[in-house]
Image 1 (tube, rainbow, N blue to C red):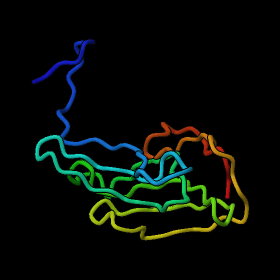
Image 2: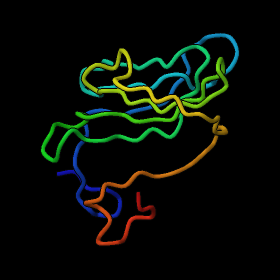
Image 3: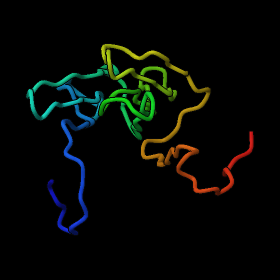
Length: 131
């Protein structure tokens, strides 16, 4: 078993995720997300588009006992053609396109930060927003 520098055991991982730029002239800087398998050296990507910026990605597991990386990626997209923001959900089994794209009625600035927390991880704390 491998140990971290803090001597706390950790699980070996088989891949990693990153936000990248597919080299297209001009802005935006980060227009795709990539899943890289460190064992097979293969990667899969979701390309948002030449005029979209990916930000604030979060991974949502498909269930509690699924293989690593099996689920959805949810992210905010800045669409520079329509000058609006979009919420995209991408299935990690097929990253060729989003399974849902919600067009927001406003444009959120680049650099909006937030966290998504599973209700199972809130330790009984009340939700921040009652809907």
